[in-house]
Image (tube, rainbow, N blue to C red; front, top):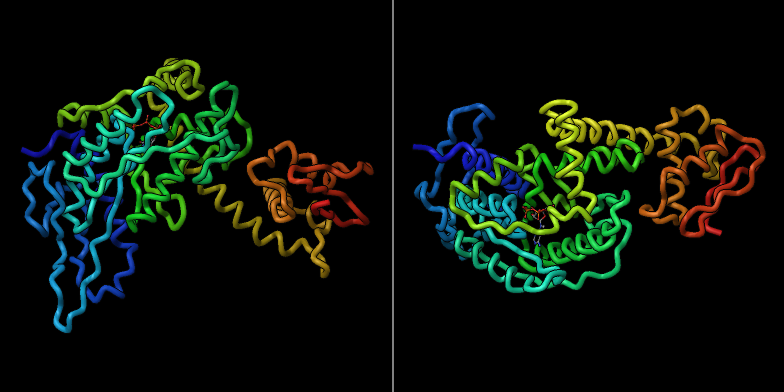
Length: 401
Ligand SMILES: Nc1ncnc2c1ncn2[C@@H]1O[C@H](COP(=O)(O)OP(=O)(O)OP(=O)(O)O)[C@@H](O)[C@H]1O
């Protein structure tokens, strides 16, 4: 009998991502020591037939077993170590399900699997819980496993992994953002320390839908509607295998595998914007609009991401074509651009002049844009980072002053 459908679903999601990671590794230099990457079934296809290593189906707790032949080769050349993939685990259902799927799939693909849990130190006993989570990860057969304590500093306006700050009214959003910054810094450090090829995160389709709604409420354009990327961070370090999977599937997978999970009380605390959205906003939307809202929002994220990427590429090209020989922006040429492209050109110019990206809001760019589209002799516009934008004789001058 095969695994429970929820377990099969989480494993397939992880297998796909491991497959991507392996495919992206530089193969040319390894002299062919690594086992070939097994091909994957189509999404609806027959169950995948592993396994180059012969790990039994029940080997949820199996320790790492390399698939590749790592014996020294003639001439004394040592084959490269198998790649290491870490799971970032809070101990919650999503990341525990992710850890279990990684523990199952990694040995079958010749990948080492480790884990990291971050103690934000924001609740009494969080250190004990972090140690417990680390133990659970080791019990799944993961190694190395780190429990890392971080100091949560003052909130910043941008997360360490480049996702926009999810403000929007929740009075405790500041500490949330600061905790996220500290967590990603710790995850980055762990990846460097262990030389990990990637870190897996347990964000689900439901998290994605919430992120899209938070972006919508901020009203700052399609980039903020594009939610979280499946691949992000330095060199594509962060991977989100569950972005197309619903939260219930992850929870079910934990249940049927008897995996203990920890429910973060913050997730149900109405003081948090995301929590209110999860427990009040989305259910109300589903009641009004019908089931399928979450899926539609997640699809919106992907479509918006593609659109935003295309517009960014257009704006990069346009930025060169609207400059005169001295490199100044020509107002007439800016005027001729579609507004979405023009605003991007202006934003880029402001950032290049020294305005911090995280402090530059849509309203700033709109004011600068009015120097082009609603010119009536207005004065200089002050932007964050002491950057000033002003129109001078048909040119738009943006510089730090
Ligand atoms: N304390 C932590 N230590 C390590 N990784 C974390 C921690 N908190 C969150 N993460 C990672 O970030 C992802 C998203 O975190 P978020 O806070 O949105 O979810 P969560 O409710 O804690 O989810 P989960 O059920 O996955 O634990 C998690 O799935 C996990 O991969």
